[in-house]
Image (tube, rainbow over all chains, first blue to last red):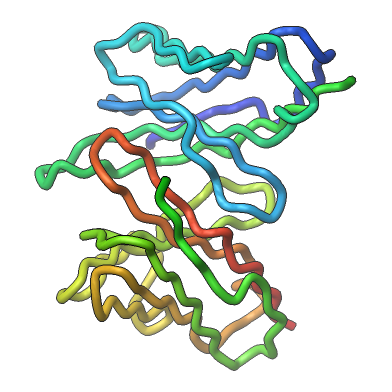
Length: 115
Length: 114
């Protein structure tokens, strides 16, 4: 069965360092991979999407890599700040015939940036 | 950016009763989605709601338990029926503005069944 693995343990990192979160998957051939941020008591917020034929995508301090051979995505936050503390979810998507995605979410990794 | 207003934000309900959750979208969207997020678990899709047709339910979810309405392109409701403590969870609605836009989520409804 399809499986998405994110480190369920919290990741603690010092302010200013680069945080790296991992998303591994099995038994899945996604067309897209997405990353979301979720704060306590809030819905997830979409951050980045990377397609299967893309190796890397950047947005401000965020960088996502996608290795379909390793079946892995890495999510980097450079110069991390305490405000980056949140749970980060990866989601794998496949396009259906109607042009819309159906995504499957990972459990998320909680990031704590320590001042 | 897209905005989805979801209410109630939280509720405590007696077992055997029903709760209806509402989501209002700030612009017309074809598809809306309802998710459940249980503690320590990933977001699980309950159903997809298209305007003018019956919702499509995922495996393990049935219409009698989670009836959905989609009367127009900016509004949807999810009812959690005949609740039991196992239904205690966060329920979220979302939409998708385009194939590469990601999902926009409501703020969620935290439901506790006692």
